Length: 122
Image (cartoon, rainbow, N blue to C red; front, top):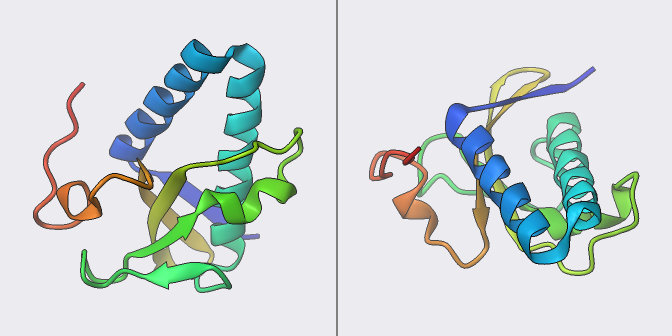
């Protein structure tokens, strides 16, 4: 069974995303967005080079990305209308994917993933 791990920056990203979602749209929205994120992470763990993933070697060796909207129908909750985040991940070894960051689609990935990335503020 394929697994995924969350880096510390990815954990911080998810906490911020879900906090903002709840603040703007309520606790039900937080639950639905969390389910959408989880479905996306499970999908890339099961098929890291699968359909709708993108090789992002320009950021760092082995990095791929996946727009979570591609898994919105796979969620166990009612689908989120317009998911706007992208998973950045790498395969650590067969069956294990490391989720490096979870960024808004409008963010510049080079500032957050790879050698030029800034440290995560806590």
